Length: 250
Image 1 (cartoon, rainbow, N blue to C red):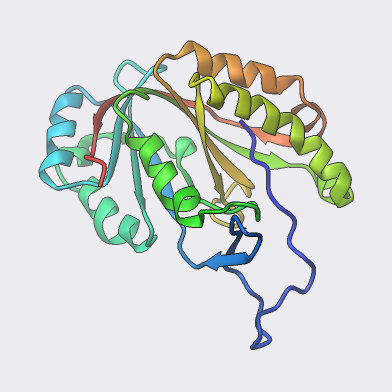
Image 2 (image 1 turned 135 degrees about the vertical axis):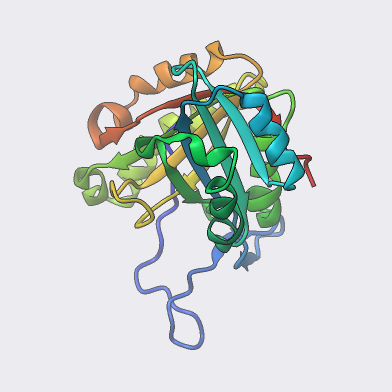
């Protein structure tokens, strides 16, 4: 499910003259709102795992904040997703843990590393819910046991479109995603990753569901949209996983 992103106003600045990089929303009464809070999410994938349940036990013992997936496409593969409002969590907690036993013996699959941050579109009435609570709930929901994660890069041609044309292109994805979400079939986690990965992707997308088929179905629907057909230069690789262990939602 490729991400939709609100356009920033050129030269938008705070009262102090510096660029205002807070996440923007709008209250139910129409007043502008803003916050510096957002959730950072990182996925690592590994091969050569002969004891995935042992890995789950190790994560639980450490109070790890994230999810352990079994990799559908690798019989000995796992994926480890972590998240926090502070990206320091990855370097100070998650990475040191993954360098120790039992994880140190695993084969790191660098091509599946993804990292991104939640972002606001500009119309959200509850920024904390949209940026923090909802993504965490979807990542940690015991009912949403299947996940597909993949990166996306848009073409320069899309960036050259005027705002109205961009919104028209993005509305196709929005309507598909909303219809799946309203029906409870599949839900998305949309992350921006500009400048955060070596492949220069723009977004990381997660789609989660109680079953695998709806995730394939929604991505198939997206193939027919103008954004996918015309304005994406990179899509994937896809990590497909089933939840083996999740942290307790807090």
